[in-house]
Length: 383
Image (cartoon, rainbow, N blue to C red):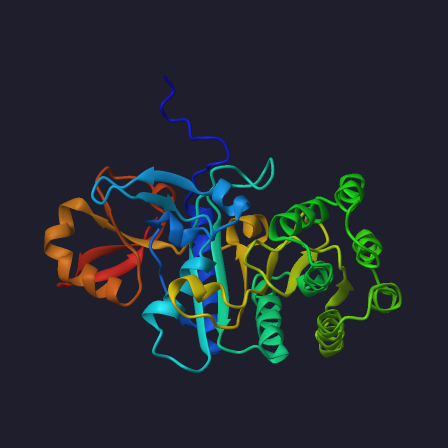
């Protein structure tokens, strides 16, 4: 048995890459902090009903499940941190009445990868804003998402804007049942027009024609065509107006805005505006997010919410290189006598490496050494 093998789509992160990831993560969390977002660290494992909403088949399929030997209940390894943060806002921080800004960074685990090359252990980092239903809150999150990607040098960005409110306005006006709505959403997400046409056979006009037109509504004329061809419904008009407002607000952001009413790939808990960021040279989105109002209802408090997240592992190949700091060699035979001096140097941020095998400077990654000279421990060049 080759017991050094890892499961498919699971990989170690070696020293140089690990340092890159941690440096980038620290920079992103500092950016969040300066915008007022408080860091939370939810547990990796919870009762499965807290991690997966009723009817969220996709997230349920991604979630590893196991039995808790203490309680006898079913546990889940988190596949998404956003529901956990919603639980924290609704329950543990339930006494807060105003806006709450929270951020996080941690591993999630997927029972199956999102694509052939995707990791099953993404390093998810993100920010969530609770308690405000205004478009300004969505814009704040979008600006923060773009700034987060720019901290790692990704500047030529395309923002894909969609809105689930358009779809829900049509299916609700058509009086469709929940199961039928779920099937239609799944077909639209897959862009399976043939099956969509069949599924809509019993849907009354003008909603049948409007839903069939949704897969065609993308690009620069998207909003104009939507107003021209879709029924006039208050909720639908509100969604289109919000998309237009956000696009206009981002004109000075140096980002290309792309409207796409076929962009319905938000998770089960998303309720309105959804967005994703793309860049040249990347096959899939770099970050995504959207509005997920009232997801905290199952935890006792329904609140407006909007946020975004990304997988930091996906960005590994372009993260800024970090040159390892050169250290100071300390011979093992001198360790006991030089402990105080070595600890002082470490407190000042220096790396002090104990040399047990009389190794070379290159092997130890040291350019200096700590030696006893003239009655004191001194740092001198290591040749």
